[in-house]
Image 1 (spheres, rainbow, N blue to C red):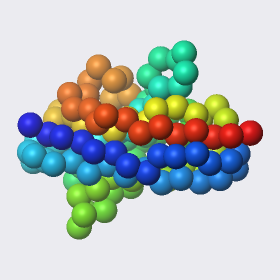
Image 2 (tube, rainbow, N blue to C red; image 1 turned 60 degrees about the horizontal axis):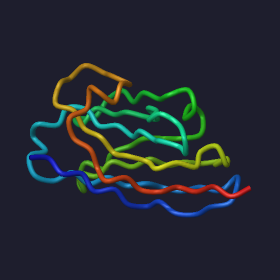
Image 3 (cartoon, rainbow, N blue to C red; image 1 turned 180 degrees about the vertical axis):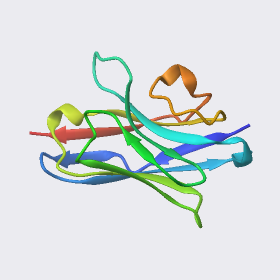
Amino acid sequence: QVQLVESGGGLVQTGGSLRLSCAPSGGTFSINLMAWFRQGPGKEREFAAGIRWSGGMNYYGDSAKGRFTISKDHAKNTVYLQMNHLKPEDTAVYYCAAKGTPNYSTSDRSYEYWGQGTQVTVSS
């Protein structure tokens, strides 16, 4: 059973940066893709960025393009989401997710494994 543990959330001012981390454990051989989703207050969960576990093409949601970067440290088996130029509308709980099938997807229903979420708050 894959377990995902996120870290790195917090409070930041508008224009600031944060880096979120996600470290999978327990059966990482079954992971094909990993992603970050976010859910703001009163909003539906939204895809932010995805990456193939073995490396390769990254893909981004519209809200993340140009400001967020997803990456993976293969030595540490950790996926990161670097978030720059943060805005108050980026305030959300950010979730790390993983899926076993290889097809790219921005739908949260495609992902089998989820972390507990980490809060990101951007003050104006």
